[in-house]
Amino acid sequence: MAGSRELLDSLKPGMHLDKNFFLKVYGHEITRPGFAENVIKRLEILGCSKAREYYTCVVTEFEYKHEQEMKEVAKWYAKQNERGDKDWRRREAEQQRTKSQRLTDKLQLLKRKRELLKRKRELLVREQLAITEKHAK
Image (cartoon, rainbow, N blue to C red):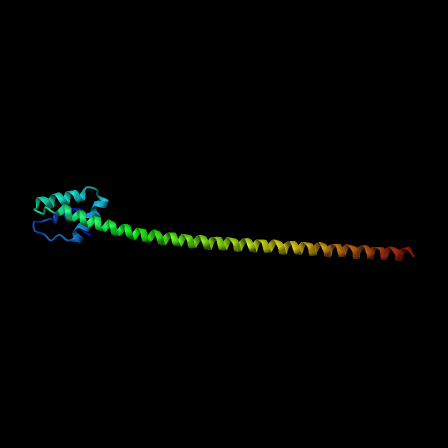
């Protein structure tokens, strides 16, 4: 894109003014507010009495299309976000189920361990009684 100085210097009577020219002016206007007004005034001095009207039409059309594109982008992002939320909720529920299953498994293992320790204690008590009876005889 031509620099703003080059664009101003390129203005000449009878030059071809098309949509792309006004889009360039608009591009400079975005970064240098007031630039478009300078270009339009120069064009009017050079004899283009409809420069402001052309510029306004091009900018209005561009902004309308841009707004429509942004609405589509917003819809897409909203859909992605919704999908992401669903995925997140699904993963969260899955993690909760997994955590719950692990806790249930751990509880069962602890119960089994308690039963085995109880059984071991009973066997040790019997063995101790047997030894005590053997020595008592």
